[in-house]
Length: 504
Image (tube, rainbow, N blue to C red; front, side, top):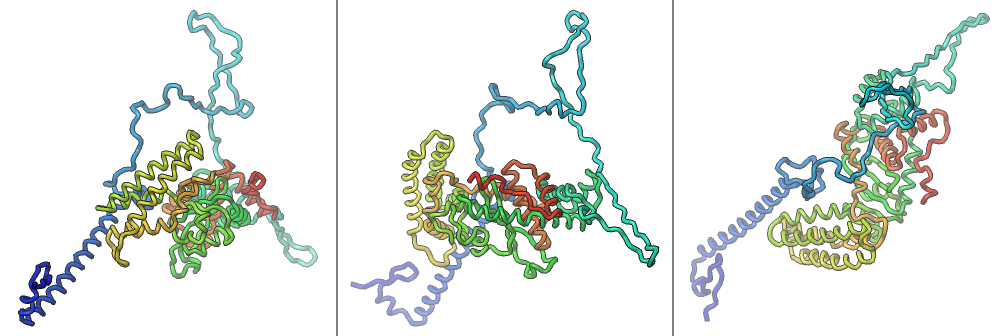
């Protein structure tokens, strides 16, 4: 029986191939090599095309990019269906009226009485025991209080030497009071103003002109006053039971020579229910996270899958499901097997969170939740294994190869997806850290980061204090004023952890 060989997909008997002249054989072999090379180039081009399509279609739904970066053509986030009701308060809704100040706090109280009856015109007299109260709130003209210190220089009648008086010890040589310094910090840290905008606000609103250099000096004074306050917050976070972590890009210039390589800076946040700690570093490596959390960190870390967090044991980690959902969306937007796997994972994720919302609302017990989640967990693991078991080339860049690698990476940390199921107080998402870091991102965009290491230190310290005080519903201006006064007097700074350690 004549054995056939395959040439360009065509079966040719060996006897005919052996009779083929050597020159033709050589040409055929070269054409075969060229064909294989062309097929490889075509596959590479197709992979590049799919990669570019993914980049073009990247939105906040399938990546970590913010919604503000979405193109106009991007599909909007899924919103709740319209209820058909009119806007505003609905029937039976408990209304909220304007807050009225206590009469003792009013500058003046004016009583108005009707003179005649609106029905018959008879004259009226008497007092209403419960009159309708209407208050007008006004801000008096803002005029800074200026206290002038005159230092006289006198000549000695004995030796003729001149001696000048000195400022009292309780008078700060900067020329600005504690509340002015604190206000500069509030305008920067709470309202995210640039130094030039702070300068304008202090002049236009408060009638206090100051140079840009003065604004910078006053911000640095606040930064110095908050050093111990922020260090205490860092220690508190490191010893907390559950900590959420996130990071975002930041810009730090090289005006002071501390960033000669123009390295990309990173703004980190470590957040707990009542205290948030920020820090700006020139590194995003594992050692940076260890320095932030402490190498002996024994709490639970809620974060995304970034590799620098991997030194924390999986038993102490809860991975963010919001990030996972974006990965599932990205997979579902691909074609073929990737689409099927991605859609299956998204459906399971939706079922999981329906149950979680019931637990959060108190309509489903923790025990019932744990039983129902087990089936969902097994199904998700099965989908991930199905994709991970496919063979792909080490350097293959096709969309399907990316799906396979993503599923393999998730499987490595799969136990860290489910800590919130068994441990109360652990959330399935890292939304707390993302919400807390959002004002810092907006500030970065409007002020273009900092130009010195000292400027970055001010940003991280003021964000730590402002965010923590907002969590605790404490007055920010009063706290900063007290902190600046404590530094000037050489007394201990106010505590950011007021009564927190005792409560824990």
